[in-house]
Length: 87
Image 1 (cartoon, one colour):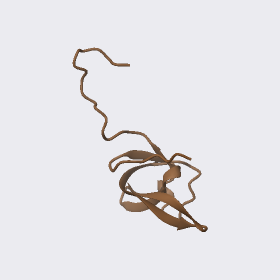
Image 2 (tube, rainbow, N blue to C red):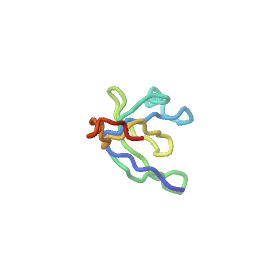
Image 3 (cartoon, rainbow, N blue to C red):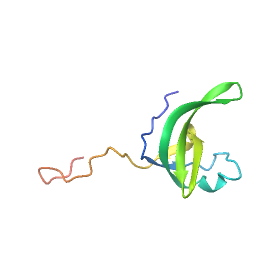
Image 4 (cartoon, rainbow, N blue to C red):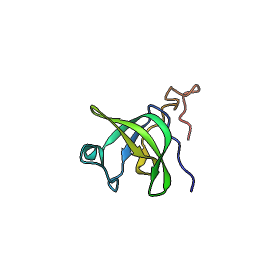
């Protein structure tokens, strides 16, 4: 399965199916900012890809498959040079 790579500064939505600790539960179904990763963590004899994310005053780790990007920190948001909108 192809895994998405998130850059630092990417804002992501944490899907509702994310099983979080009581401390981290308030980030589920919310927007978080990727601040580190990716890295591998052990899980049930295998490895999972995780990212460090920030939600309000918390820094948490989140499984990559539970994050959905909502922005691209490298996107060019400037005006088109010829004044037309590129589609």
